[in-house]
Length: 245
Image (cartoon, rainbow, N blue to C red):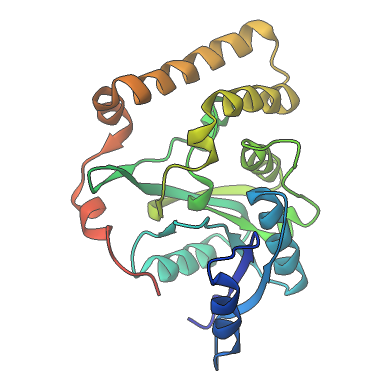
């Protein structure tokens, strides 16, 4: 797709990724226009490298996918480009996400409204599209190992309009740092809320209690969590397993 380019920041993999990237970038008309492989301090360091490259290449928008993630369907890119054309001034566009939940199941995780951002990320960052012009001097803060995307998203929201997309954007691969270090992630989100919303102790206690309850349900009573947070829809199962362009 001519309007889309791929940028890859690899953290120094030793499994043949470097050779694969070199071969892909050398292929005629390759959409892979930039890549690097080397130590970057973690996922957000890599995302900062890619963001810098997107600015240098004068890209219009950026969507960040982590290793293991993919787009929700074959037509997702086309739908995203159409949404961008309809909301050219939006600093942030976001949609739903498909998520693997075990036993080969894929469910639709409907995004919450961005107006509830004080409760945490309202969808996966893999389902968010950032307009480069709106984030021209923003970076993912390395002092947050888990919640840097939350801080980055809140800062972006203050810089322009926000558009809600009526379709799933990504197929999210679980098991990342946010799932491995849940307690650290909650503490970091509390720090972010204090910075952006000025939460005092009592208000932060209420917000944190709601998050801890949701985390406890997901870990100990997953069926209840799935009932309230996911939807079993035909689109989720039709989208699962499709190859992205």
